[in-house]
Amino acid sequence: MTAVGRAILEAVLLGTVGGLISVQITLRRLPFFTLAMTHATFPGVVLAAIAGINLYAGGGLFGVLIVLGVLALSRRPEQGTSTAIGIMLSAGFALGVVLLSARDGFSKDLTAYTVGQILTVGNSDLLAVTVVGLIVVGLLAVAGRQLTFRAFDPSAYAAAGYRPTAIDMALLLTVEAVIVVAVPAVGAILAVAVLVAPAAIARLWTHDITAMTAIAVAAGAGSGLTGVLISTSYDVAAGGAITVVTGTLFALSLAATTARNAVTARRGRRPAADPATPVTAGPQMKTVEETG
Figure 1 (cartoon, rainbow, N blue to C red):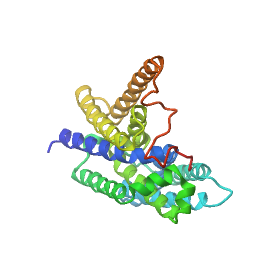
Figure 2: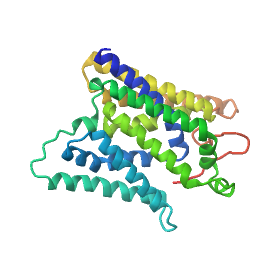
Figure 3: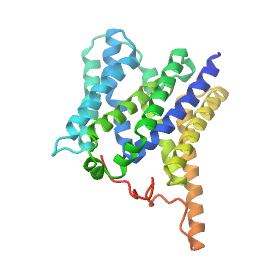
Figure 4: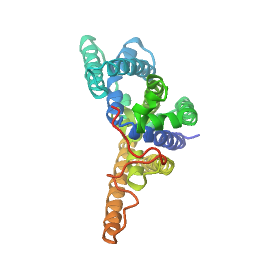
């Protein structure tokens, strides 16, 4: 397979995986966590570069420590999840800066980690995305109902006898795994677009979770494919092109649904999709509650 062929396959696979997990990220109000994780794993990358091991493995292992730290802090009564994420984000990134400044003569180029190089991905990267994709599908198949229940009514979830910490850890570690496999393609800086934007686009069009997931997957895969084609045709950065396409698709969706809702309102009917209307997962769950 050619480099372009691998890049296209990587983009489509990553867009599909990102679209699947982005719905859960949106339901649980975790875009800030996702952004934090893409930056807070930086010390692991620096340590990996110093030790001469794989940068993405270093970032992933450090990311696991960050997830555990967030969960530990957020369980304390005086600390909320957002506070815990902010602390871990700033501390993690600062540690990476300290390690860089303390290492005399450090010359390792970390550009690939920050902005991605999808045209250089190999078969191992494709395998990694596939494996993580299977993990995401497995998580949604086994615990999809629990994840939705936890997102919509965390108090009732705990009262029903479920263990919030276990399901939270499973979701956060899965998000971290997707971040790790997204980095070679779009980099740490742009990975958040792959993991958040697809569901944000879908949320404009529907409130049904099944339909939202389908639209998110289509948006993620389509944006990845289009971005790579633009990159190869006009010789621009692939990660940036994918992100720009995703942002453009969001802007067009916002404009289209806003216009549609305005027309529907003038006709005296309730809009089919309105950002102010809560996502629904069934007759017993009507609102998304802030869970951190």
